[in-house]
Image (cartoon, rainbow, N blue to C red; front, side):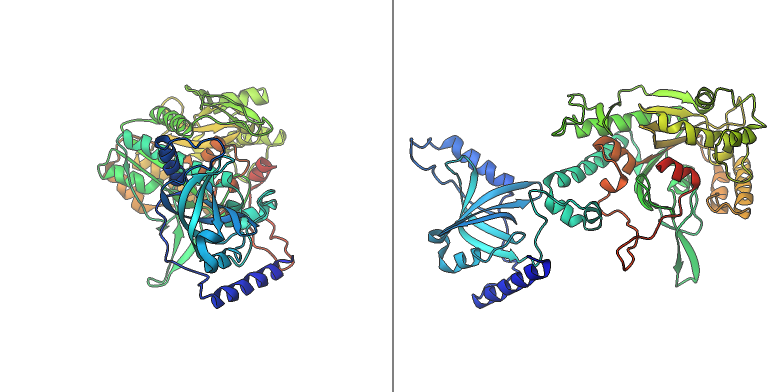
Amino acid sequence: MPADDLTAERRRKIDELAALGVPAYNVDFVPSVTLDGARRVLADFEASAPAPADGEDAAEGPDVRVAGRVMQYRQQGRSCFAHIEAEDDRLQVWMRLDRVGEKQFAVVKLLDLGDIVGVRGKVMRTRRGEPTVVADEVTLLVKALQPPPEKYHGLQDQETRYRKRYLDLLASVEQRRHFAARTTVVRALRRTLDGRGFLETETPILQPIPGGGHARPFVTHWNALHTDVYLRIAIELHLKRLLVGGYRRVYEMGRVFRNEGLSPRHNPEFTMLEAYEAYTDYNGMRELTESLIVDAANALGPQHSDEEGGTVPCDDPLRRSFSGRELVLTPPFRAARMVDLVAQAFGFDPLDAWDELPDRARSLGVHLPPGAGPGTALTEMYEQRVENELWDPTFVLDYPAEVSPLARKRSDDGRFVERFELVVAGREVANAFSELNDPIDQRARFEDQARLRAAGDEQAFHLDEDFLEAIEVGMPPAGGLGIGVDRLVMLLTDAATIRDVLLFPTMRPRRRDGTHEEDSHLSPSRRAEES
């Protein structure tokens, strides 16, 4: 039946309900137990009740009140069996004319898939062994005007799953459990940091100057003050101000916003965890990063194989599967300098060709932005040819100072800074520094970034005078860490795209003909990465 006809049929049933004096939308029902709670009530009753004799029906147990959405429904003469769902659970209810009476059974016959009902009755086990609530009273709570997705095949259209997540969740208990796994990871991250004495904080999302990352910001307007403000692209600079203020360990987990394109790994708004600790460095952040990821994996527990055996069945939660390959998260993670990884991949030592490195990279087919220096060339060589090949967790150490304006330079070679990125399955998961706390050096680097902005680089850092003034007061030596929470959840749940771990991902606008606006906003290196 066409969708419009189904909706019309359901509206007609609302009129029939009204004729019976039954509201289609009712709030006069409160469950006494969850669906799983009803099963536990039955189990407790059966543990104390005598077993029925052969051929006898099982005894009815205590009275319960349950509520849920009707996801299966079959009428058999004067009785009706239905399965209702709530959260990640389902339970059978049995509605009989001789128990609920003529008026309520008339309501039962008007039920459709997707309706929400409240049922009061006795718990029992059917002859087939299924826990069931035998209804003494049925209350229609919500009449659904549109049917839920077809239960057997689920919601097949991928785009509809993302655009109408409520249908995706209705169609699959597994999807509801999948997104609950994200909450488990977030709780584990918080638990680890809280246990180490970090203070969770909240810092501004609307900022006068976007700082702390290389990204194009979103701009909005503050009407009362007649000024533009920006949605934050990172949390970093405000947390460092807190170190100046006297806190030793601080963190925040929250949304950040970057005005860039969409891809399997990029969404314009995403969740970032940033943590800062005084009197440590990027080596301390390496140990913290390992602990956060290991604790999150352990909190999720072992990964189970799918129906096709596509994952790695293993009781060890640190041995997981991602994209059909085994992923070992057992610490200590491998560590390697960026310059050594590039030397191995390209067959020559970049340090020996430092001054000529931009020309050398271009001759080898590496795309570079205009005006790129040796540090940018080295970074692009790594990102375009090496990063995607790193599978098991690898700390990539010592980035060029040219691309790291907020990190402390190495004392033995000022071309590089004490910075690492953790790469897992070819994807950056974490980024950490020994933080730069020299206000003179920081000002000089901000001024270098300002020149890049003036030359047309929209992702270069803004010069933040308030932050400079803060560290002029004196910021203790510190280590800082950022973890992309969405990417971590992707790895731990074997999700192919960031849209599979965001309940409501950003989607391209649809044109009137149903096609989409094309995404032309990714940089060439990002497009190469996503291809």
